[in-house]
Length: 248
Image (cartoon, rainbow, N blue to C red; front, side, top):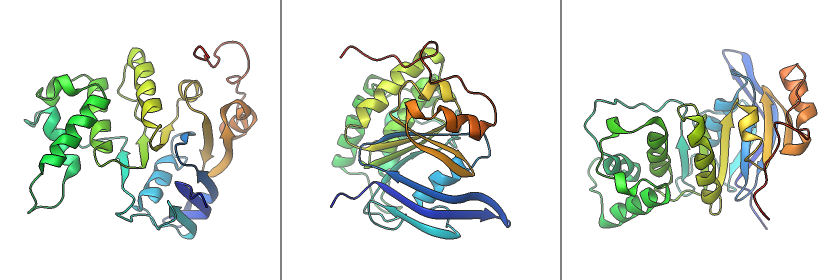
């Protein structure tokens, strides 16, 4: 029996008695590359925090690889929308990623930890900058370092909340290529409100605005996007913009 990375059934969440998410049903498969899109305030970040076990649902069931959220046996890589980071703090790239292997206050980092950091930095293309101070990096380079910190514990699920916010448009394509490489061994869930960008890179989309309007292949999402945003959407039709396929 194949167990999905995430199973969410009939989930409802309220904050101060106001509904934030209503009747959410969502399945995320192993090695899926899913974008969750929708307007600001639509509950996208809350949904990620439910998967992480940081938000308790008022109704429904959530399973992560068949277990309850927060189970340490199922580590999840997470890149929040706003990373708490002091650019003036004297820490280099290697030390930043090493912090992702933290085992507790009284436990030192092992040789294995340092090997894993080297592997993660190599994978995101930042190994040559391992000694550089974080304050000297561009926004795109910082995001790659934070991705390395998120994957250094070798998670089977990676959650990214608006990861393109601080990346130049020229860097976004290479960043998506990095994610496509990572999804070979983990499921990736990417939250974004930039419909045009994600539609050209991901395979599946979940359209969320308190309710789940659609979950499935990108090319069939247009009607649900119009219903969710309450305005005409001419994004996924033939023409421009359009999905660009690599040589195959």
